[in-house]
Image (cartoon, rainbow, N blue to C red; front, side, top):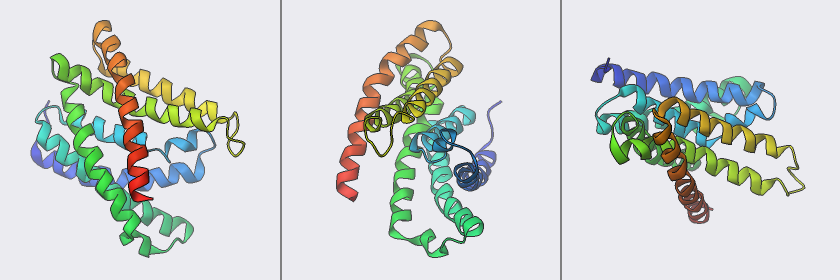
Length: 207
């Protein structure tokens, strides 16, 4: 059943608050390597994807709702940090928080729409299913790049395995037929490369 507009609006705000607050709790109390999923841009992007997937139809409202979800999650995360470990509340409106909100809008629009596309047909469905796998594959590639760094070490390979597994699981759950799943994985690989390049460019711009 397609949720109504009010339900989507309420879910975007409440879900965003819970995402940010519980994400901080996840990082603070879960052991490595699973704690890294809380400190993960892929996790937040996939949350936006599943918001759009839940909303079912209307890519625009899914995109807007997912963008609100991620924007609300940013101050909620820092609020949890202030309440649970006495961080300064001023970080809620710091320039770095505004940058993360900006990226939240971009990711929310792309992955929220992708979640709706994943329930559609044709090439849009394939791309929609591929998006969450791509963002996990991209993160796995970044972890793999750290594996040879003495500051990280071989334990980082656990994060690579976890990210690859999660990407594949999402394809299996949302891809439908075996053919669409295979196509989605094939599309996810170049998409992951594009995301990796985008992060590199954004890092240079905002560094």
